[in-house]
Length: 176
Image (cartoon, rainbow, N blue to C red; front, side, top):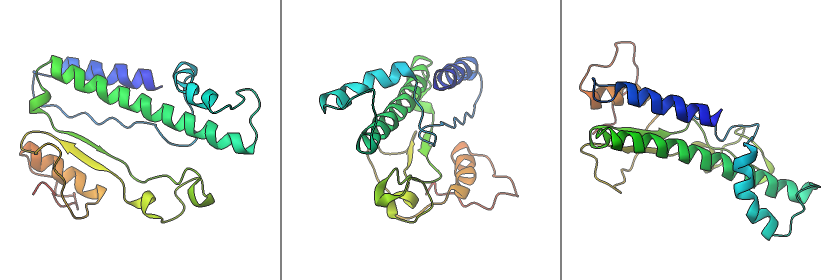
């Protein structure tokens, strides 16, 4: 699934970059439950597990958390590879400096912290999620304070693109 996502996303950019303005939204499955990873990707990350003396055949309760952590890290690595592939193709097409790239999530995960596996709680790591944007006019490594809401994404994207947001959009641009 992750390789297909990477392939399809890169193909989209290859098809539309340079032709006209384009919009691509990539919804990564990582790192949703069930935590799944390809065997190939998992093998790359299993080294840490083996170095810790974990048995890769029998998983007991204690080892489950390590297993979960390795798979979670593998899923994040796969997502990073997908984003990297998109950045590479944008760079190859000489569109990188003319493109806004955003990364966010709808929620964080407890992944076992506080004895909870999911999003059914309100510790800060489940509601204070990243919203990272790179693009023309945004100073590298800068940080803005304040809160934004995902509902504001459409209005912000339209504002960055210089077009009016649909009248039905209830969001407020956080471009400023």
